[in-house]
Structures are given as C-alpha cells and as structure tokens.
Length: 374
Image (cartoon, rainbow, N blue to C red):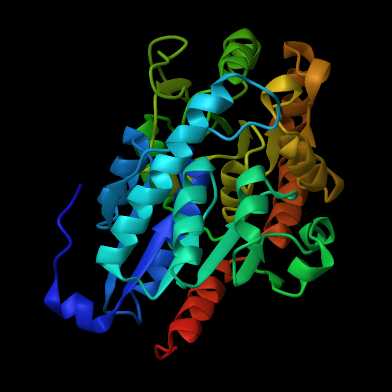
C-alpha cells in the first residue's frame, strides 16, 4: 500500500475514487478525474481491488492507487458468499483505516463490488459519498451504495424509475462520463496503427477488457465472409490470441489503451458486448454498433437492457441470446458495410445518445460539494 504523504496536497484537500472489476467501472471515473484536474489542485486517489488491469489503468492516468480486500457480491445463493462476506468485512476495516489517513473531502464511487466497503466506511466516518451508475438498471453494488450516498448519479433519465422515492430525491441523470480523447481521435493514425490502407470499411470488434469468448468465436466464424468486403480490427481480450496473423484486412490485439481514440475514429462500425463502456464510448465516437449482449445466468440482464435501448433509438443492432449466430451477425453487418448511408444514419442516432458534457457535469457537482471554485 502506498504511503500517505503530500503536504501541499493535504492543504488543497483530497478526493477519493473507488470502483473496479472491469474497465467500465474505471474509465468513467478517470474521465471525471480529467475534468477535476482542470480546476482542482489537491490530491486524487483511487481505491480498487487487486486486479492488475485496474491498477495499470489508474496509475497510467497518474492517479495514486490503493487496493483493499473484497469479495464478490452475488444475487443468488452460493457457499462462496460466506467466505466473500469475510472479505467484504475485512475490506471495510482496511478502507476505514485508509480513509482515516487520507481524510478525503468526498468519496466518489463508480460501482463494482470493490466499491461497497469504501462507501460503507466513508458513510460511517461522515465523509460524503457520491455514487454513479453507468447501466440502465442499477447493479447490486449501486443499490447498496445508494442507501448511504448523499447524491446518486445515473446515466439515463429512465434509471430514475428504478430508484425508491426516497433515493430519487437525491438522484440526478448526468450521462456516463467518457474520456475527452474518445470523441477526438485521428482516423489516419488509427489506420496506420492497425496497418490498414484506405478503401475497405473497418469493423472494430471489441471483446471487452476481460475478453469475450462468444464475440471472439463469432469473429473467427465470419472472417472468411468478410474477405474483400471489410477490414477487421479485433480486440480479443487479455490472454486471448488473435484469430490469425495480421494482414492487410485483419489485425488482432489483446487490448488497446492509448491508441483507442484513434482506432475508434478509424472504425466504420463497432461489434461487441453491450457493456456501458462500449456503448457510451461508441456513442461518443459517433459509431454504428452491433451488440452481442451478455445474458443468461452470467448476467443480471443489464447488457440486454443497454442493447435494447440503443437499438430502439436506431443507434445499434442487437443480437441477444440465440440470435447471436454467425449468419445473423453477417446479416446485421453486411448491409452496414455496403451502405455508407445506413452507417451515417445509425452514427447520427448514436451521437444523439451521447452526453459529451457528463464528465464536466459530475466534476462540477463534486467541486461544488467540497466548496472549491468551479
């Protein structure tokens, strides 16, 4: 654990962030930190889990990272809930000690199971808690944190309907924060990084920060049918090898970080899961999307809801459950490949769903609460 130092920062104050589990719980928080740094000279720290992906992303953004023990929150009965319950309790006491040393003016939660112990600890110490939900329906961590939060921030106006009346009075729809660079990438730089020349439309297939076997398998299945029609940029996820060696129409890579804005700018459409990160970054970049939402016992249904919302708005095509077959995927992608007009119409609908000022709006609320100039 990092030492807690910094006399100048202590005088300016400290803001703590918490959240993790996936990139969707980290990158929106980093987007808010970007905007805070424009006007806040104090210390900003992140409390997360022990996952290396979280630490790397946070520290790459120049933010101090502290890890705490925590257990996974499950909606169904499992004997693992017993052992994980002890981990959550341990996380509470570690977070309470850490927050006592840091003395933050506010704790901002971006969700994920790791956020629960810090939020409970902050509330018990009288530290204001703001919590943010990216998905249409609140996840379990957000529902727990919302009981103790001073403000509940949500991405969609419709999410307010999921909250009890008492919580709705403390809630506001802000949109989901997206890093400023996402909407301002360089398409030429993206094509150069991918090794693609001008000509073929580019399909960007995103397996997510943790990879998605189903998406990867679908990409492998349809590649022969896309030959000569489209180039495929394929993020396979950590530990997943590309489908085939790179050539002029395929480039596989496990993960993309600094180059993502440029790759998004170069892409003509996005294929992937319907996690909030993919959805909101795709909308910010103004790209048509084809979703293969995660469902079944491994999901609480949030991706199905996200995908349906975007499809209803004309910004995406959704292939849930048994509809996610290679044939159906080709039927969704080929018309977009063949029609620039169809891509443009869907891209315009996606742009209408974006909330480019969300990160600034959240940062303004935080600074107003802690009494700093906005």
